[in-house]
Image (cartoon, rainbow, N blue to C red):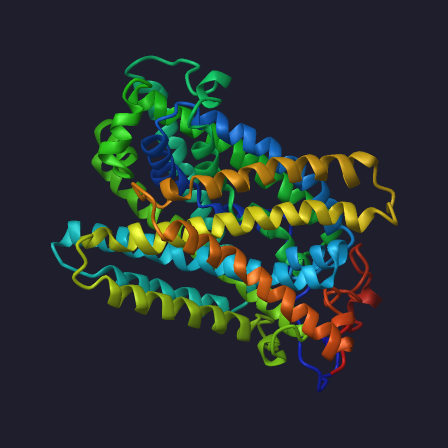
Length: 515
């Protein structure tokens, strides 16, 4: 199928995603938005301290940052050779085989849908609680989640640069809010400033597995730059730069802010305070030491942080669906792209439908629940976000191995470090984290004892891969033309460098398997 630029004559072929739209700053904003910095600081830190009782939370972000930098070495190298909105799917298909690629696509769709839907639970609870506290009303969580759902759905079918502008403003403001908290923390410092939390002995203790399992979830979304590779101005450079920047910024910012939270509360009090106050710990500190107005503003920015994450993951899922449908791994009608906005409309609407069904199910299930207002946080958000974390870390292990497979026969000028050593070290490190998530799953979902959910939810994360293996085998035997094109849907586009005037007026050809 052909993608026509605005200067080319109309054709009967359907349009593709927009080209040459996003630069490095836009990619960084979208990836960091998915990680939701203010959400991690306000909600993630207290949960980590409270559940594990370990002081080394700040150091955990540095350790994981190193592991994810190793992952990025090979991931970035693959991004210079493969441009596909399916990202993980395409990399694994070309590095480990097409059937494994289809399996990974099912895993990725499940994981990204889980985290996107999960955030609706936290957004609904936090936004309804904030409005009710300020107005004295009794709005249910699903009502405010429904409003967010409508806005995300509308932005998802519009031009991607509109989403980028919305996200950029939200990410900038939430960074500002966290920086204000950090500065105030080091001004107040009730127990002084110490190195507690940054020393190896603070982390590598009995609860290290739980801490790393919690902290890795804070990085979810950092890898999503490659999903926009077909819409990037200079994909050979932009994807790698954006991913490296995102890892560095997230790791450093999270480590420093976790240390600031310990300083603000006092190392001797941080665990107890986290267990008592949870997400209110940060906002209470701001209210007491910066002002009530700033605390209210921070809470509003907490909501916009969640909304930015909703939008970022929605766009990621929509592009995965588009990529798979374009190659007929999913029904081709799901590859529909609007000719004006170049948004993957069918993929966007499909993700919206999944989210709506989940919101309705949990809204009905929570009626009259003994968990009260916390129901969407303790179920929808907690269950699905940890399910997503397990699936995405497992996928990153497969991607690391696929780097070795892809560059094994053709080095493409990359060093042994890039094509083998760093990816294998990444696979080992992330494989360990994956095991830790599985072993600590009861704690991650807040279960005090053995729970059926500790194996049901991991099964939801991983079993779609088995279905994908079967579907890949089916395509190989029954539809070999489709099978041969798996993982190559974004190829045939213009060269990696910016096009000349003559090139920019030519149509971009997308190789689509003939059925």
